[in-house]
Length: 193
Image (cartoon, rainbow, N blue to C red; front, side, top):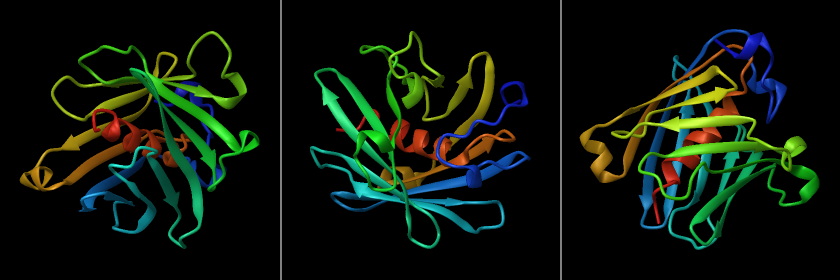
């Protein structure tokens, strides 16, 4: 259940709905250096699309709405062993459009665990959200405090070998589903070069 029935709005009100949102996220490597994500609701409508370079030294992903307008930009910053992602509104990289930062919980772990720090509390003591990964798959849960706000199940298929990944997503009521999709992209990229 969403954290004490509070709205978890990071990217925008339009991505928060008063019911459980079920999504299908499909990732496809389109060429040697380009990956594309499509986000569908249960009826097959495209809700979001994410494009970006896979092998670039300055990884950048742009999330767009169905009309093709930029919603957020995800940028990877590598600092030695600790890789950080920054999420900004639209295509901006300006500090006043900074929404949140995401980084691995610990530098040397087998499982992918991420900490998310909102812009408003970036220098405070602890993360605002925590992402706990699985040892055996790309499945994970997103936590706010002691409450799960989203669950992501990786669907491994033979297409996964060819660069096609699929995720089933359950986002709890009043939780920003675009934010959860951004975390899927970051988790999916966490172990890639």
